[in-house]
Length: 378
Ligand SMILES: CC(=O)SCCNC(=O)CCNC(=O)[C@H](O)C(C)(C)COP(=O)(O)OP(=O)(O)OC[C@H]1O[C@@H](n2cnc3c(N)ncnc32)[C@H](O)[C@@H]1OP(=O)(O)O
Ligand SMILES: N[C@@H](CCO)C(=O)O
Image 1 (spheres, rainbow, N blue to C red):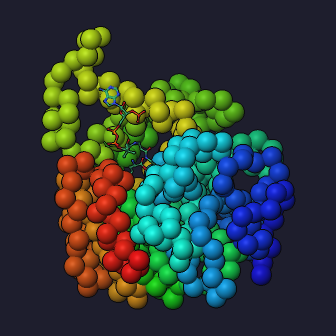
Image 2 (cartoon, rainbow, N blue to C red):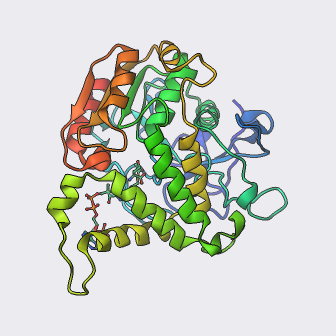
């Protein structure tokens, strides 16, 4: 098998699946330097080149000798490899799909080997704009544009490194749903089943409008410095504005009205504004603004049909058994986007009833878990 570099304490997964890298944060993250697996620099869809790529990932359960019990879970925009488990060293947040993973859980670790990797372009261990370029300085503004297809190419190299020829399932919501669908279209022979949740087959004008506005919020912060603020906290005020804009699209107007209405707190601040301040502040301390710009641009260029004769032709390549689901109050990825994918795959659309809007894919764990069980028979 191609080389996976790493040194330090023995990984808790089989030795060939990776290892700690000296000096990296502690926690359950493993690191895979993919250079040898990729057999040279990574040529990117939009013309850039990355001379070396590292992926941070976590695993739960044991890989079967035939590699046939592996499932890949794809995180969304500000997620990371920490699918489950408490916050702690190396992990700024608790698991983002806590409750879905474990013995007897929908992602049943008595049976399955669950993998979750930080995305290319991210800031939680995988190569991104805050990583060090070959000249020893952070990539910053020089970090090349990456597409969903590039991100999946990196994950395919990780799968090769882990000895996983075919995933029993690839699952993802929101931006994670894009990678899950790209996997099923680009590598139909490597994906046995697909869970596509709260996402779409191609970016919409509405999403482009909100995402480019978020990028502008980051870039107009004087601390952005053309994207070369690293090292340093950088444009956290701009990132905070971006998060406020984004968070509004993640929740439903009905929920916000019921929770906050036009009430003010003792300080006179509108409660909904205070709520958005809180989410902005929480993101600013855990997420790199340049990664935010890179990853929103990845979503801006998402179109599974590009170079494939359109969305319907692309979807026709999928051989995986599929569950396609959405949240009825999602105003960012409305149900018609998942309906298009369901129709293309010839499966019924499953609708999760929830007042929480797009974030319902993170919050409605019982409903999501029931669909995962249906897909995997767990
Ligand atoms: C798929 C991924 O990988 S994404 C990674 C995880 N996602 C994120 O972290 C994104 C940011 N967070 C979120 O989107 C949401 O918090 C979710 C989806 C994770 C959880 O949603 P919910 O449980 O409904 O939490 P909600 O949005 O109500 O936020 C609760 C927080 O707001 C705070 N809050 C509520 N009202 C107010 C208010 N008026 N003023 C200030 N703060 C407030 C609460 O104190 C709580 O704070 P805490 O999270 O620090 O404990
Ligand atoms: N809360 C999610 C929403 C995007 O899907 C995130 O921040 O990743």
